[in-house]
Length: 310
Image: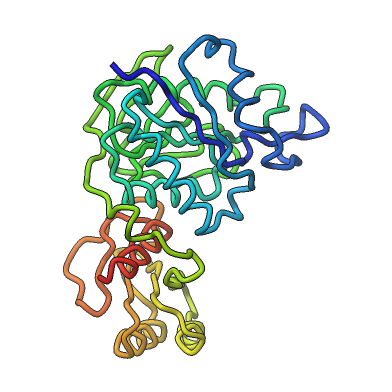
């Protein structure tokens, strides 16, 4: 049975440091390497673990080049017969986007687990070590597969996970779907099935990320106009995601501009700006619904669809 877990570091709050240990917000992200983060968890000593630093950045600055490199390194390690799973330490700001990107590109049949922290490594009660320990527990689960986020003892599927809070340690949730499982004292209690699905494959994104399609997100709101949409189309945008109000409704001025964009050949995907819930009902082909995807996951979905020629 494979027993090695590979931990790929990308920076984030989990690797952050502050001058004052009581300061949980005034820190600098991405200061400690992933090897140091793992070494700080006594329960992991002596386990079959490998670490690799893929990037060192604040996840608010996540970019397509880092996504591509992370996907390549994750695919490499997941293909190794001795590796049972891969863990990625990641900042929380864009974790849900990276999770969906990796699920759609790789669709792994082994667990690919993202985790991070809401408090820096120097905090009096940092949450990073426990999250790493829980993530490795999930990565070693024989039945686990797909891309998941492990945070505050909960296991979330890439398709469902959202960052819901700015500060609390349990900052992530899965909306109506609920978590896949919970980690309780080193044991996994599963509630529903693991995420499955064939990925697009790395061959589809094996070119320079600078040439990836440009997909932007616009929002419907009171007093919205179509000027931003018109400006984006004039500026050469390749696709648009609209975060609609409620069950996919759009301000009439914004809707007219989006329909002009669609008529001009710019694909438009509609989702809701609500924190939970899927779009229900029939929507026309000019602005198809993104079902339960968040605006940020929908942007990834549309970008990958354009990359694949869809």
